[in-house]
Each structure stands twice: as C-alpha cells, then as structure tokens.
Length: 617
Image (cartoon, rainbow, N blue to C red; front, side):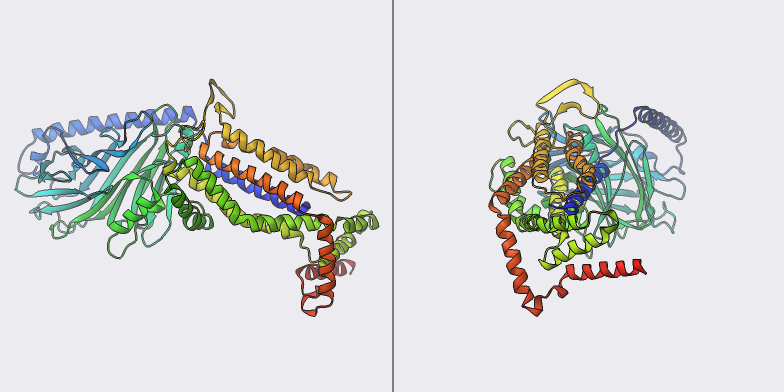
C-alpha cells in the first residue's frame, strides 16, 4: 500500500469520524434544560388555571349565546378500541386519543409498551364559530355507536346539532381512522369557514436501556406532499422550532423503535409549526414534541375531514405495507421513510441489499447474533472482488518498488522532485499500474460499510434479542459497569466495542507492516501513521455508548478483514507478480490497441510534462 492509498484510508476514517459526530446528539446542558423545563411547567400551570377560570365564567353565563353549554360539564371517561396488535383509549374529555398500548412488544420491565397515556399527550382541534369557538380539549363528548374496534365521540350543541369524531381501528393493523363531520351546525359556523386547526403535544417516553442512544434516534419526522423523501427536525440541548412552507402528508413523533404518526388524507397546510426539545437524563422522557397545523373542514357536513393515526412499531416491513394499504387515492404515504436508512446511496444499499438479506436470514428462526454473523460473511463475499483488487493494486506497487527506489537514488535533490515524479509515473504507466487503484475499490465499499451503521440501530427485530453477554443487541452491552461516571467513557465498558477497536488496531498494524516506503517518505508518513493508530481509540470513545449489535458487526467485519489480509499476503508472490507485469508490458508493447499512449497513466505523464514545460517558460 503506497502513500496515496494511506491518504485514501485516512480520508475514509475522517469521513467516518465526521459521520459519527454529526449523528451524535450533544449532551443536554443541565442548567439550561432545568430552566427550560421550569418555564414549561409554569406555562402549563398558568394555562390550566386560565382554562379553569374560563370554564367557570362560561358555565355561570349560560344563555342562548353559549351553544356549547351541554359540552362544558361532564365526567371524563375512556372508551377502548382494540385488536390483536394495539389497544387505544379515546377520552370523552377532548374526544381525542388518550393512550396507546402495543400488545406484542414489551418494555424494559416486561409489561406491554405504552406509547403514551393521558398525562403525556394533548390533542386539541379548534374551529371558529359565529358566537363561540370550539376548542375540544376542554369539552366533553358523548360516546355513541360503541363497538370493539370503533366508537363515535359526539359533541352536542343546544340547538340539536352535533359534531362527530368517528374512530375506527382497522383489523390486524396499527392504523386508526378518524372522520370529523358536522351535522346540523350550519348556523354555528360562519359561511367562509373551510379550515380547522390541530394542536398536538406529546412527551415521548424512554422505552430502551441506553438513554443517549435512544435520544439520538428520537426525532420529529415529516414528509412533504408529492415528495418521496422525509425530513426531520434536529434537536440538541437547545429547543428547536420550524415553520414549514410546503404541505405535508404526515407528521411523526418517533422514538427509536415506536412512533405516533398523524396522517391527513388531503395534506396538512403549508403553515405547519413544529418544535421539539430534549429532556435531561433521569426524567423518564426523551423529548417533548409539538405540532400546530391546519387542514380542510366542511361546515355543512357534506364531506368529512379524514385523519389517520399510526400507533405502532418502526418496523420497515410493517410500515411499508401499511403505507401501501392505507394511502389515499393518488398518493403514496411512504410511511417507511420515518426510519432513517442513511443518505441516498446508503439508503438504496439498505433497501435493496441489506434489508432483503436480513429478512431472509432472520426468517430462518436462528439467533440474531448468528444472523448478523452470516450477514457480515455474505457482505464480505460480495465486496471481496473490490478488496482483492485493492490489495493487488498495492501489491503491484510493492513489486515495482525496486524501480522506484532507483529513481529516488537518481534524483536525491528536492529541486528534482518534478523529474522524479515524472519518471515514477512513467514506470507505473509502463507496467499499467495506477496509484489510485487501491483507493477507488475502498471507496466503493464505503456505502455498504455505512449502510449497516444506519440499519442496525433501527432494526426493531434486534430489540431485546440477546447474544453471548449482550442482553439487548440494540443497546450497549454493560457486563462491565460501575457507579462513578468516568469522563468520555461513562459508567460501563462495552466489550464488543473494545473487541472491535483492538481488532481495528491489529488491522492497522498488519497494514503498516506490509508497507515498504521509499527513502525520504518516512518523515512525511509519521503523522499519517499516528492518525491511523489513533483512529481505533477515537472509535472507542465514540462507539462505547452505541448498540452492541452494531459494535458486534464492526468487530466481526474487522476480524474478517484481518483474516483476508493475512490470507492474501500469504498467497501473493510479489516476484511472480513482477514477472507477470513484465510479461504484460511486452505483450502491450507489441499490441497497438493496448499501447501505453492509450492508458490513463500515459495521459497523466503527458500532463506532468506539459506542466513542467509551462514552469520552465
């Protein structure tokens, strides 16, 4: 491996470190976080007091100008709709979902996963009336037409009209359909009303073991209408807000493995206001998310406002199938885009290579650790031609080293650097060797290597799956842990992370050992050597809090790379390789179609000569 190949590897390492940095959420500043939470608590208490005073005043002033008076008093109850997958409670106060329980998933305590309860969610629908506005969160609905998987929440008025919220839970699905329709309320609404507003606030629970890792993957995600890709609101220790300028099909409050998604049949308006803030560790919550938006409403009741809710897992197969099944006519919801599978090229590698392979292997019913092992072996087989080509390119450079050493001895002076480089390139051109031949195959493998970085932390199939000493492949393995927090390490040591970093160090050692540098290059390579040896240490501090499944994959991937390197080193005879290069040179010399003037190296050599000519002028 020559200097250029080392530079390529260093460049790859820097890209990976930057990727780890960008995808890592900075730790919340405790003072700022506490101050923000105190402000939010005070604001909520003030709002609650104002709402109570408003209710008292409204009840006292009962007259014909208060058509919603029947809905201002009542006792809060819950109506449950359920199927074999999810149980959803609809509250009579506000007529909105008050809790969602997933029946096939367990939390860290062994109970069913609760996405939210009534203390953690607020969903308020607002409509402007002629004499009184509707704000549903403080009004009481009457449940009618109750069945096991459907209920109608009815908001009655004094004049006999009513507003219906019809909820229907689809069988064997996580989708709840909501139809909002007015009946006999033409006199209540102004004639020009065509919009209703939705205010949605939710505290997202901590569901997994690793707080920092789960918080990193807890995002407010949304999909623009008529666009395939989704976007998300990045949240660090500082609260973030954003006003959208395009209509959106859906808005998702997403945990690492579970989501609450609100979908509009006719899209939410382009003025949606989104905001999110992160909670400090120990609060029991990851982030607080808010969405304020508008959607169409027919005051005459001829057409219902249609909204859908997804209360379920971030399972790629489930989300993709659900999006296809429940997409409105002429639309593609693409609910699976709530899962971040990486940048465009990386995402396509995940969609068409990693996910199909993983689904095939996991369908065999074997342990998920074995699935990751087999997946790694298959990937290594797929990319082996590129690995082999990269190694052979480096081996060719080593085989030609005696000729390069002669050139270095011929031009020892610094002012002869241009001539030395020209003759070196001429040697490479003569034997058909490219100095970039080792870098390009390595870069081609990068999307595959990075695809697993995005896939493993999002694979719900690995959740709570144990392997060896790791009890959950989606969380860090902490068989070695302690109480006192150590800077940059924390309170545990991930064994798979340590194994990966040690193996990475061995890989660097073997790579350095086979390097034969020309005289004069030692000094310039010192910094690069140090960087190559420091990278495993940087990986350790970065990946210690990452999932054990990801570190396990990196470990066996690095180990297999070492074994492949040793195998190729032992099976490659550089003297025979040089003889092959000599024979190929003789064959090309007698074949005009393969003459050196047609090679890329010859063109590079010609460019260098032209550059030298211009410099001499």
